[in-house]
Length: 162
Image 1 (cartoon, rainbow, N blue to C red):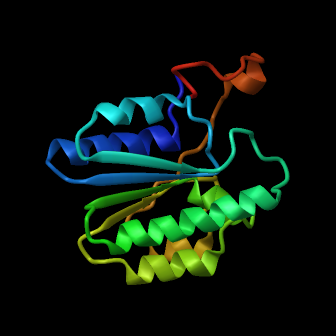
Image 2 (cartoon, rainbow, N blue to C red; image 1 turned 90 degrees about the vertical axis):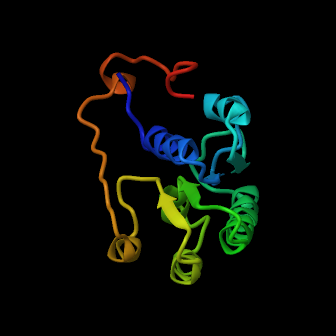
């Protein structure tokens, strides 16, 4: 029974659309077009999703990862500052910061300058940057207790993990 950070953020976005809010999810470090959420949100009014990254899992970031991170941040700024969306989700931004793909100072500027009406949700990594934690109004930490990847050798499953 997996419960993930992206899954929780999608749930929050879905709830918001149920009240007529406009939601934009921007995924960092995710360029795999067959993630279930990419297909699912296409049918949800007022919910948009765009990915920045490669289809591969990153062990060591390469030039393309840094380029995608930069594109993602420019796009995020455009979406947040447009005042067209009520909720903006920066999925895996914490991991992108941790890997150095996204600059923490750029994220902090985005947080500090966002329009008041925009609810900004950020996911990614067990160690969200302390400066983001300081600015957060709500902070939820998800902690893995057990995972079948390691305990049972089960691989990622279609419709469950992606």
